[in-house]
Image: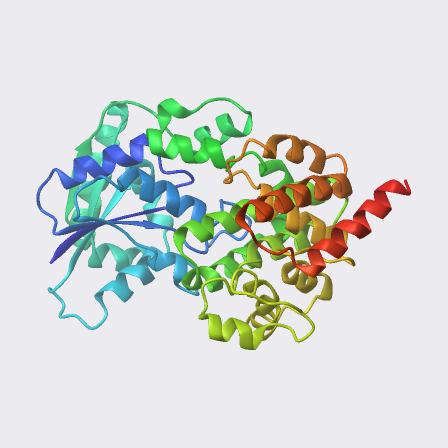
Length: 397
């Protein structure tokens, strides 16, 4: 079996990435082409987007491609650092030596720095290379280096000459962070996803979490198998928006990030397990809300997080609570009004959330009351008490 392995941060996956995939696949010599977003980066201070966002841009860009082109979360779920040499060894483990042949699909810049890769010499003996070259001026240098690697390690190397169009994820992020349009550099589906969910809109807010970023990556990694992909995107939307509001209202950013990221940790567990784990003092449980009071048990026992404010914010993110903290209000609001949700009533609530948490809570709770009345559902006692408590607070200002 022969496969091409295309790894990278893909932050985001763009048209140049797609052209590399298409050109490599058109060689008609691979059984599979595997696109594999990076998991934990070996560069501790590299604050790339969390995995679900990057994975989603790959999924959307590739969703209509040949079934032989596969998206893999192998490096995302692997608990260690994402080194290509280790990934290749894991893929070959348990196979005969010639049973699986792997060629790495890389850009010319990666070839020029490949001698800096982890266990580079051993890797060159285990894989082939398909090198995409966009700059014709680089062609001689690339061919010379490829020849040197072939002679020294016996590496099979194929050069793909691409259209001389320069597109980089860094450039795209800079455009989007500046509030400009980068649709021409992305597939329509990826552009729509990034724009509607405002993936890069909160980069400045998130920069305050730089020292904690690898910890947050590890939390996402541990939660990854528990959630569907749409739920993974939702929790990142909540996390980013919660950090944005926390910065405005001077609430601890790390607590906001952790609570936002993990607020649905128990969402997809069997209902029986959720009911068993739910906190004893949470009244009137039902199937729609039980995951919230179940989360603290799992987050504490499996992740070692025992901060009471974080656990309470998660516990009451579906119902609110009369003694809810500002962190709890932020998580409640972020869950309801994150940018992946599309309701006409949300823009004014989002605006108010940046100005006054209590008034934004009242606006959101009124929307909840209206929706429940329309559906014939009962309002939870905690929700009613929370509304009354916040009303009194606002009236006394």
